[in-house]
Length: 134
Image (cartoon, rainbow, N blue to C red):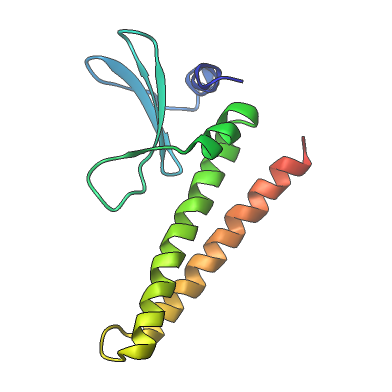
């Protein structure tokens, strides 16, 4: 399935609310935006869960999930990767705190790490369920 096919499935589902701009149609769900451009018909999938004002293109690995398994699996893969990235940052902050206890509230970081780990596990279980159904 191509990215265009992913768009067709999203756009054809009457429960999905498709938004319009002057030159495109788009849909956001689970932290992921898919957009089809009127000018050339190209479709782009972006990660909206960034630490900046700009969205990030999905990775080639994430693209495989969207194109080969579908929208939900792709969104779950993006969410798992976002959790991994955040956990890496938090774990680095915890390591820094071990050498400089005044730098961060280590207990708060550990709670955030645990919460993110649980969230990632939930996403992973949902993705695993989809993969088992194939």
